[in-house]
Image 1 (tube, rainbow, N blue to C red):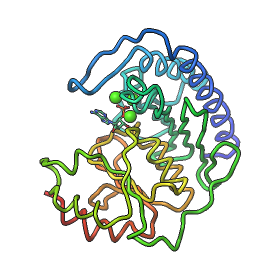
Image 2 (cartoon, protein in one colour):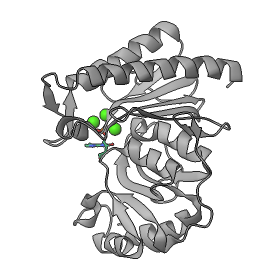
Image 3 (cartoon, rainbow, N blue to C red):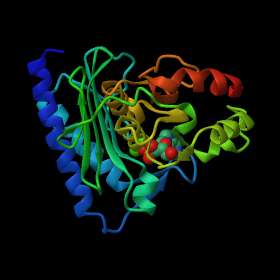
Image 4 (cartoon, rainbow, N blue to C red):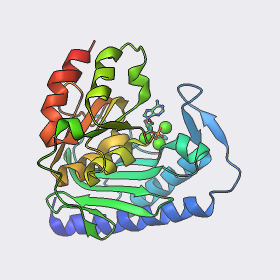
Length: 269
Ligand code: 2AM
Ligand code: CA
Ligand code: CA
Ligand code: CA
C-alpha cells in the first residue's frame, strides 16, 4: 500500500474510532437492548449494531471501493482478501460492556491484499488507543511501544487464557492446559480478545491463546503485536486465515515455540 494512501486511510479510521468511542461513553447509562446469538451467553446489543453501522456507512461513503468484514452483519460477504479490507469489531468484549461497563474495545484492522497495514484497538472507557502501521511500530496513545522483552524466561511469563480450556472440552486435553498454567508465573482472563492482543503488544501479558476467534477479533491485534516483534499463529503453529475462524496463539517470539511444542501440540485432540 502506497504510504500516502495509507496515511489518508489511517487518519479517517483514527477519527472514526475516537468518535465511536465518544458515542459509546455518552450513552453508557442508557437502557440497553440485549439479544443473544449462538448461545445464551453470546450477547449483542443495539450499541454493537449502531457502532458497526456508523463505521460501514462512513467507509462506504469515503472509500466506496473498499471492502468490510465485520461481526454484526453490516459488512460484505467476502471470499477473498484482495483489495483494501476493513476488518471491524464494533465492540470486542460485549459481555464486559454489558456487565462491567469497562474492559471492552473497538477493534479495526485494515488489510491490503491480505497484508495487515493498519491496526487500532481502542479501550473505550479508559480512553487508551493502541495503534500501528506496518513497518512503523506500534503506539499506546502517543508513546511508541518498545520491542518485546528478548530475555523473557518462560517460567516468568504471564499468559492470557480462558478458563474454559481448563475444563473438560472437545478441542484440547485440559490436563495439559492445567500443566501450562502451573508452569508459567501466572495467567489472566480479560474477556476481550482485542485487549488481550493489546496487552501482549504492551508486554504486560507475554502470550494469549484461545481456541476460536473470528477475523474481527484478531485483525487489528495481529498488526499491533507484529510491530513489537511478537508473533501470531493458530495453536497448531499455522498461519491465520483471515476469512475464517481460527484458534489463536499470539506471543512474545521468545517463548512461542516452547509453548507450541511442549504444550499445545501435546494438548491438541
Ligand atoms: P465479542 O465480545 O466481540 O463477541 C471473549 O472471551 C472474547 O472472545 C471476546 O473477544 C469475544 O468477542 C470473543 N468471542 C469470539 N467468539 C465468541 C462467541 N461465540 N461467544 C462469545 N465470545 C466470543
Ligand atoms: Ca460477539
Ligand atoms: Ca470480538
Ligand atoms: Ca463484537
